[in-house]
Amino acid sequence: MGEAMGGDGHPPICDYEGSSYRTDFWVGQGREYEDGAERVALRRLLPPTGRRLLEIGAGFGRLADLYAGYERVILLDYSRSQLEYARSRLGDERFIYVAADLYRLPLAANAVDTAVMVRVLHHLTDVPLALGHIARALRPQGAFILEFANKRHLKNIARYLLRRGANPFTREPYEFTELHYDFHPAWVREQLNDAGLRPQRRLSVSLLRAGVLKRAVGADLLVAIDGAFQRITAPLTPGASVFVRSVAKRAGDPALVDEERLFCCPACGDTPLSRVAEGHRCVGCGAHWPIVNGVHVFK
Ligand SMILES: C[S@@+](CC[C@H](N)C(=O)[O-])C[C@H]1O[C@@H](n2cnc3c(N)ncnc32)[C@H](O)[C@@H]1O
Image 1 (cartoon, rainbow, N blue to C red):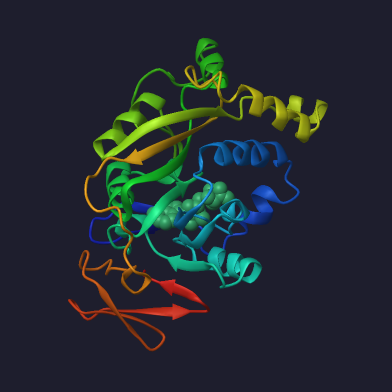
Image 2: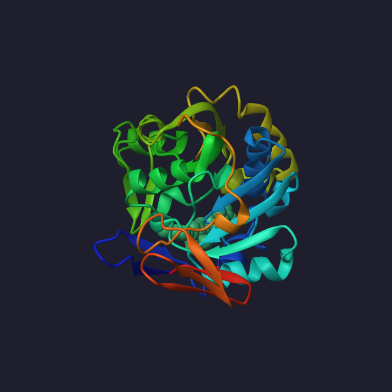
């Protein structure tokens, strides 16, 4: 993974273009427990049906099979290569693939009724900017399901007590390696509220993320135990990962925009785009955004 500069003073991006994230991190890498526990949490928090769902930082589409109840699913990621892999697996029938930077989200207001973001917040240096874009793209009363890496999890507390780690109780994000952050649950709650997203329900996930447990107990049993504790441990959030469902507080017409008006220009704000051969053109600044290998490219 590299670092891409957003340009024009925009925040840096953890760039997965051309990375083998799927095989380096997931396939055959002993993370069936984490994958299973995240699926249990997402299923619990996700409105099961809807018209349009957006997954931000969707990568290679690991979680896309959970969106079967949605008519249209927008998989958005900064990396075109991740999306091209997703497309080769999922096809075009219900899915729309968008290569774009979350900090310049090319989606119109009221674009979707549900948004999901898993394992992405930990790469973000400007959380308010990112959440502001998500709140705008959601319809009033739409749902946002966010996963984030938990700074105040049990292992970090133990490390701190043994004087081997940073203080997990302070509110500010902790950068444990470049462009990788852990967040305090209370800090994330504040950020969501400030962005116009009211947290409603949260789950504490991946409490059992330890090599010794994974070797001793099968992934299926670990997932079942994790699932049984996600709700009751939520107030203390001892798990490595937290899932929160928020609702968009914005008042107004909850109707979604028509699909022809789904995109807006990331270069000049929320100007609508007109469809041209092989892409989109901004009626304001004239920028051309192509469609390459079935992916709408806005970067
Ligand atoms: C750790 S991967 C997670 C992928 C997927 N959500 C999952 O859980 O399997 C992080 C993803 O976030 C994407 N990403 C990071 N910064 C981004 C940004 N500013 N805009 C859009 N996507 C971004 C990366 O390209 C990468 O695919």
